[in-house]
Length: 137
Image 1 (cartoon, one colour):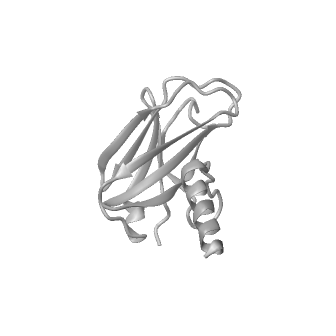
Image 2: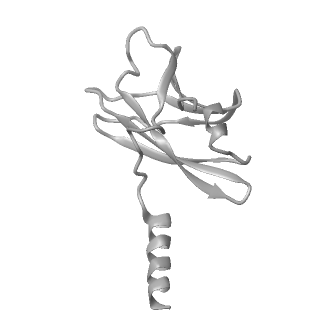
């Protein structure tokens, strides 16, 4: 009885207070599929693979975007597409060198592991963009 109570408290703490720890290597890593970035303005921006959480009617994706460049990045937006349809668009704040930005996106459809390859992640600054996807299985 006591052990299950402690486990429940620890799980609740991790759910509500935990930071997003993205997996960089492995099968869940993102790969770039398209880009138009002649001046490499978005080269140093990194999208970490999302963490998937369950909702009663879909999934929540916890996203983490990092600036590993030497300069402050301004006026960058992030778009998430599911089956070629835009689910959300987020204007990222000005990001200093080494800064990260974390947020969550809800998708109100059931997603299986196979449906993850229908997700597309786009970083856009003006006319420059970089599009990422999960590798197909």
